[in-house]
Length: 226
Image (cartoon, rainbow, N blue to C red; front, side, top):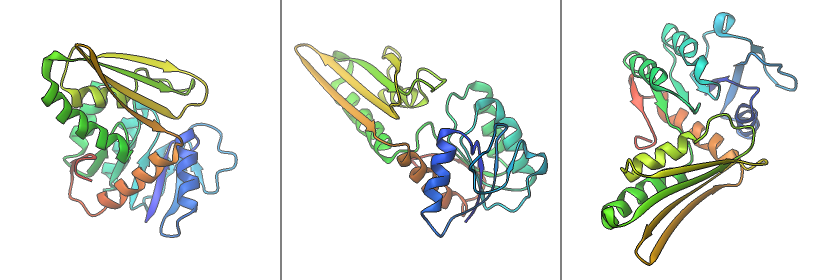
């Protein structure tokens, strides 16, 4: 599978590069990143203007502001794209929806299988406990993460199906990610926690998404489909 990494010089881009290097069935043909690319073992372009149209899939770990140019290139070259960038707003989601009418698009705020399982559990627990329990979410990430609360926190909040869920975000040290969901009732509390000990879990998840996506028809896909 020939891959283009959009945002290859970021923390997740570099982790994805390292993970791919451990698997002979994947090949990165180039990267796209406006920042310096020292130590990157493949050609890197500052934007999509000169990127060769030879990819089976584009994997995106970039910035919400770059989504429009990314999808423009993918539509032009009929390329599937996995979008793992977080902090997307309404406009970015609208652009993604429009693009998915022409190409296969996989988009999720979190590519971890564990987080997906947690979302499934939260939906069932919420149905059982109902309105008698208050809910809250605490999430902690490294101090360099720009969006707060995280996209994953919103994903978990959607699974709870509760507009009153309070979300607290902390940005500390080098923590890859920890999310705790609390159900607080009368004299009893239930807590569920997911801890990411390495960014590698997201790199592995995004490669599974890419494998899934390259044989799909145009449409918008997520972890439920995978």
